[in-house]
Image (tube, rainbow, N blue to C red; front, side, top):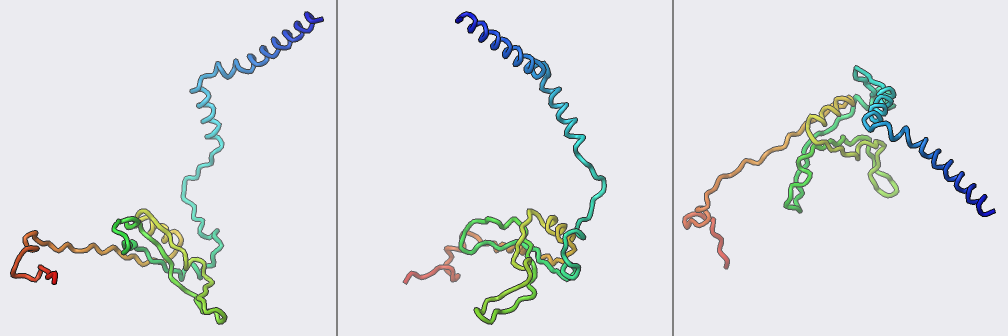
Amino acid sequence: MASSMSLLVLKRASSLNAATKSLLIPTRSASTTAWRLARDQAHDTQLITVEEKLDITPLTGVPEEHIKTRKVRISVPARNAMQSGANNVRKWRMDFDTRERWENNLMGWASTADPLSNMVLTFSSKEDAVAFAEKNGWSYDLQEKKAPKPNPKSYGANFSWNKRTRVSTK
C-alpha cells in the first residue's frame, strides 16, 4: 500500500515538473531583446499620432466674454523681506485681475463669483507664461524685474574722517 502511494506521489510530482518545464521553456528561450522588441511593437500599434496641433480652447466650456475680457499680470515675485535667501525669485508668476467683487451685508466679507481671481500660477520662464496666456486667449501685462543698480564704494570710505560715514556710539 505504501509503495503504491509513493508511486502515485512520484507520478504526480513528475507530471507537475513536466508541466512547469513546458511553461518555462518558451520564456527561457526568448531573449530579453526579442521580448522588448515585441513589447515595443505592441506599444507602437496602440499609439495614435497627430501631426498638427489641435486647439482645444473651445472645448473648455468657458464663456467667450470671460476669455476676451480676462487680463492677467505676469511678473517675478519680490524677495521675502523676512528672509535673507532668494527662494522663488527665479520663477515667473501669473495672477488674474479682480472683478465682480462685493461685500456681504451680514458679515462684511469680500465675495466674488470669479474662481480665477484668487488663483496664482507659477512658470519656470517668461516665455512659458506668455505662451500659456496666449493659448488661453487672455490679454497680459508683462512686468519685468527691475535689477538694482550697484552703488560702487571703496573699502577705505568706511574709515574716512572728512565724510559722515562714521557713527558715534554715544
